[in-house]
Image (cartoon, rainbow, N blue to C red):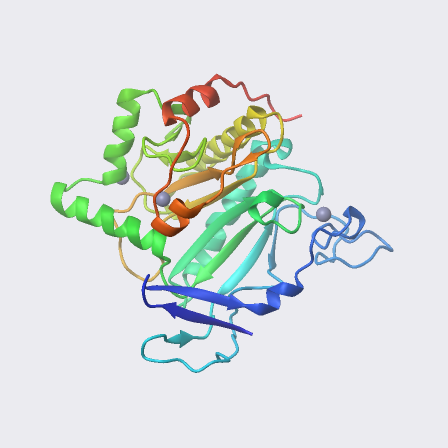
Length: 327
Ligand SMILES: [Zn+2]
Ligand SMILES: [Zn+2]
Ligand SMILES: [Zn+2]
């Protein structure tokens, strides 16, 4: 059972995907479906004895290329739509216990190249209006397989968070004839107190308006709208920047930090969106060792985040850490 149901009060789609209840839940390491298939071993989702960076179709997809018809009747107040789209899993490495940090910047560079390829290929499909690339890491974020991987959701619509960013940046562009994120980045560079690290055109900083503890955004100084505009050198530098942020997170409490990483780039619905500015956002979920930051009543019900420290303090903490090179 799978469909899109319209939430008329918030004006956004909700995906029902009941088949996801059968998802594999933390199998023992010997039976990980994302490991390579060992000779004579049980067949995993990768029928090879080893692999590099690999794309798989999600076995329990929220969106499908050939979705079933909705199982319920729509209504003018609450329309329904087939859950059309594509969900892919991006395996970072055959090593079950690896992280982006243990794999090193060269593997992250390969991942960046796959991001670009998938954005281009999925975005070219006529039914796909948005290619959303992200990683959930850690059981605290609801990850059910610990094998290192990211995900790609190709949506038949532009999701609401991106719509809000498009609306704000468009209004600013119309009024000021400048890019909002370019101006925000210039302010961060001028003030300096929230900067964390920089690699070529990429600046990593805790934004003035951070909502999550230790939230970091990676933004290019060059105004680009998507991965497709990156030079090879800029892809290398982005990989180093992503590696650096995760390495600092893991040093912070001396344990793997649970986080969500999301890429925000322009939609693939044919619009030009020259006013939008590509960036990567990290939302860590720990405010102290073992203490989770919940999206509690005020965050979930009012849409207002409350943080218990200042972005300037978080930036100073992250800046002071010295990531070691990969082993
Ligand atoms: Zn595995
Ligand atoms: Zn810009
Ligand atoms: Zn964003």
